[in-house]
Length: 396
Ligand SMILES: [Zn+2]
Image 1 (cartoon, rainbow, N blue to C red):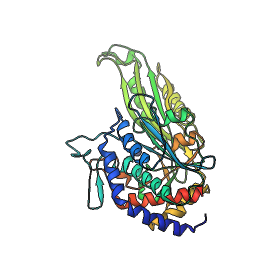
Image 2 (image 1 turned 120 degrees about the vertical axis):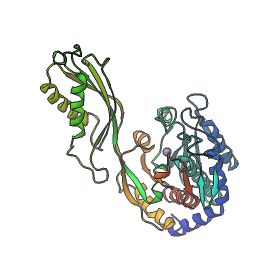
Image 3 (image 1 turned 90 degrees about the vertical axis):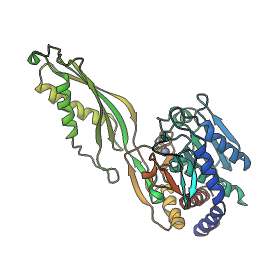
Image 4 (image 1 turned 135 degrees about the horizontal axis):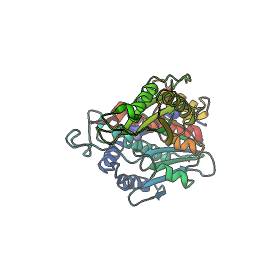
């Protein structure tokens, strides 16, 4: 870059501070544009984003797989070169009026913005819009493209949002920065576990409830298997992610108290490590099931994967990771640790589309999805400056 990175960081921080008032107003406008998912109604905050970008002279494209389920794409800089994507989401989780009064009447007080979506993900979205405004005001245009992706449906599985955009071939780029992990810009998410929902069905033999020995109880056999799964100790270990996990989340079975149950089903959420696939834990559970079935006459198990999201892992020597760890401390004064996550972010669909993606965000993850969700204005200002400096550094 033509200007030393420290100088650029200082300049962008000053530019972001000068826009603090409009950053706060934008965040509040986005929160007030209610987009609780379900049903979503992402067209409301999308209109706020469109209005702001039109004011900057930036073209916006709209993508709606269903009425009101709006996702937006907008880019600044020179096309044909490198592309840095910043995917965020427009929807939020619900907020009940009795537990979180005024969730959609955002207020800014004592340096905090309070409202549903303040940190997840509307405050960060406003900060990225301000970063685009700062870069547009620069004398020299970006040497590549900074692409804002404001996606629908992140809180309910991405089908109406990021998955739709990936399917249309619209998620193309060299890098993606996903501002949706909290951690107050102190950690960069470079690895995420894979997710597999596994449905286990046990079949036994029905009998009259007064003669349990005549049947083969599917509920008891399944309970025995679930205890084995709880005690499961996978040998694999990842330096940032630890071990795979399994959570028994749902169970059903039987048809009457006076019958021996001939059928029972459990659903398990299994998080597995990069380098493995969902069939890894599936095979281990099948082995446990074979042992239980061998101990119990008349019982059999079957398993299937009902949902799968592959893991992702980014090379920490990647220019994106290096740039985040170099630039952010110049703005926040704090180092950036490497982080692995058991949860999933928009990094996953980006990685699936061949884009190197990391999670990095302002605000506290513990504030997301809570009553009284809030974000510090100072952090949003710093994140706007960081995003501008990162784009300038990576794209020239
Ligand atoms: Zn989020």
